[in-house]
Every structure is written in structure tokens, then in C-alpha cells.
Length: 194
Image (cartoon, rainbow, N blue to C red; front, side, top):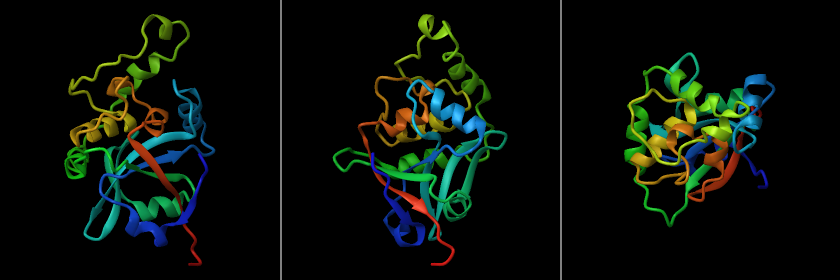
């Protein structure tokens, strides 16, 4: 995939409710472990959904130690320019973005899914993966979610299964990036001089 850098201020009006924001791993060790050692290695270590609220764009996501959060997209792009890639659901897919955003909003303020993360992480241990591969069927078990697991749930509420051959409980950022239901739009940059 060719990276297309766009200034946030120039393209913010092209971003819609329910678009997907994937975060490229930076210098942090934990980010690189997630990106490089997932079952589908990719440049990504985090997943979020984008939503408009009072003429501002927000990221809806779950963050370690904080749980479900809503944060201004502009601030995140200012702090991490060139790290946020924006994807949209392909036009030929029937997607209820408002239902997906509502599901994401319902997660704000909830705890982070440490149990779910540990459960998915165990499948990467030597030999364990051979005996207990990630499940393929989705389940709504009420577990608190980590970022890509939560995003998978939200998008399913909107009517699309991003990874039909993988259970949402094992979805990782690389799986979302490779979904046949999504199309890459651009990578957000932030130039203070503009």
C-alpha cells in the first residue's frame, strides 16, 4: 500500500462517522510488539473509530489503563503526525455507521479488556498456537474489549463483519487493515505552519 500523506485541516471534511483510524507503531517497544508479532504482522498497533460531535472529529477507542475513551482527533494527529491512517467501509457494503458509532459511544467510560487481551496474547506463545488456534466464530460474551476487538464489535453492530474468518475476540489491528470491506483513504499529517 502506498502511503498518501494529507494535512489534517485539508481533509477533515472528507472524514465521516464510522471511518476507521489505525495507528502506525512508533518507537515504543509495546507498540512494535503488537504490530510485528500479531498473527498478521502489519505496521499497526492500535485501532479506533472516528465520529463527528458538535462539528469536531473524535476518536472512539479503548486504551490500556484508561478503557473506553473519546479524544479529539486533531489533538491525536498533532501529537502523532503521520501515524493515523484513515480507512472507510467500501461503498458497495451496506453499513449503518450510526449504529456502529452508537456502539462505540456505549464503550466510553468502561474498563479496558485486560482479560480479553491476555486471552488473545496467549495464542502467540510457542506451541500454544498449534494446539489452540484463534477461533473463527464470533461471540458476544460480555468481556471487556481491547482496541481492535472493540472496533470489530462496533462495526458488526453496523452490519459488517470485518474479519469473517476470525472471531472478534482475536481480531488484531493487522486483520482490520487487511479486511476486504475497507479501503485506505490517507494518512493524517499536522503542519503547525498551515
